[in-house]
Image 1 (tube, rainbow, N blue to C red):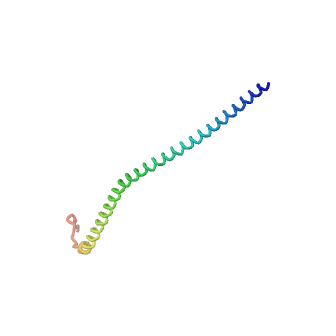
Image 2 (tube, one colour):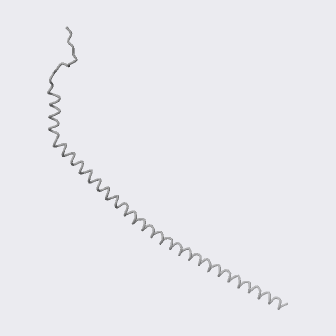
Image 3 (cartoon, rainbow, N blue to C red):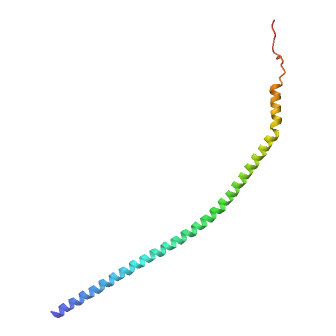
Length: 118
């Protein structure tokens, strides 16, 4: 009976060792999964930063040319306004004289179709 109980004790101990090894393997697996997840996250972050950098450089190239175009349009608009203002000031007085002469210089005439009936 002692040999039987001794064999049972050995089996229980072996089972306990196997259980401990299994738990240790599960812990190592959990650690490795966590490490792999961290490495994947770091790789994803690196890739994302690289793609954002490329996007920003392309955006800067496109927006930079649009910015130059916007500046050119603004400059042309300012120049046109300046030209119109100077033309207005140059021609204002002569146009006012023409308008006033047209309004005040009236020569009364009878219309050709007017019939004077007596």
